[in-house]
Amino acid sequence: MDRNIIIPALGMLTGIIIPLSVFIWLYFEGKGKRKTALEIAKHLDDPSKLEELLGIFEERKKEPIDYRRNGVITIFVGIGLLLLGFVALGKVLEGVGALVSAIGLGTLIAGYLYPNTGKELTDAVENFEKK
Image (cartoon, rainbow, N blue to C red):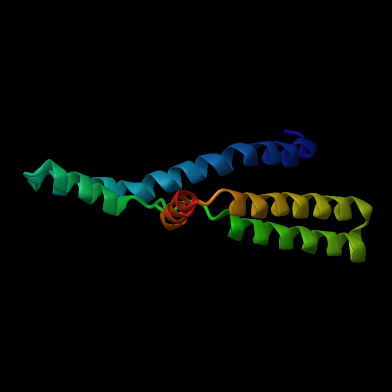
């Protein structure tokens, strides 16, 4: 094999190896949880307890997305990019920073226009009913 082809071939294989290794890693990480849930489910008589058990293993957050928090974070990431472009890398990065800051500002405004927690929704409905 020609030595000039080894590095490009390894570069192309990286695009396959990384996603495949992540898939294998996630499979083996969840395997123990699935096996545990299956063993416990075999010994449970009440199906409602099984639903509660599966809820324990659920890793996703139950809380809604806080657009205000995400907006502030995005604004400051954009400001950081803008400053990095201003100090070191040039006009293109300044433009990217301004774009990211504008997206963060839009997200922040959306967070105030659309309340997302249950308490905020209840308060908004109560305020509307008072009027």
